[in-house]
Image (cartoon, rainbow, N blue to C red; front, side, top):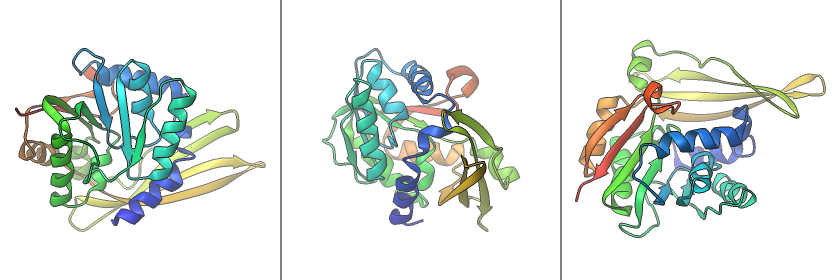
Length: 253
């Protein structure tokens, strides 16, 4: 997957991303509480290096942390800043590739990379470059916080689709689902992201396409350790309250 296609995917999705949630603001608060419980006492300097439209960044800022956001998609990053401002918790954002973070060394206490964003990096050198950059901008002892799909089982079964998800807003219900087309290596897959929106008694279909790498936990752990992190731990959804498995690790000093 090229940088351009990943950026195009999220540029296109940014105006509709909030509609995935039944209540986006409630999801912000819930996710911030779950992630915040894994962090040191605050307020903390936090970089959300895959901030999207701000789901985690805004919630953490509203919880009292000093948050900066960056994202490959300039459209998503700009929306995150605007949505944060409306809610009274400014979050400065930048359009930036997580492999080339434009921030000072040791500038943050926490780096967040959520919503399976790491999986859009399709080679081991790309993953290594991103994690090395996250380590660089963290102070010694700072916290890395990644959330990824539970791919170990997914790679075994290779599902062809995700279950439909129905959400609603004043404009009506929306249906979201993905079709997955697996590569021969059994690790990478092309996804078609469908959103069905009501329109004059019928449905409008929007389709975005991207490619992901179904990283096993062992692959993630090895890459994280290789980038200079220690105390690597997994936190399961049942215990953390977050919707995906969460990996935490400390920047070695």
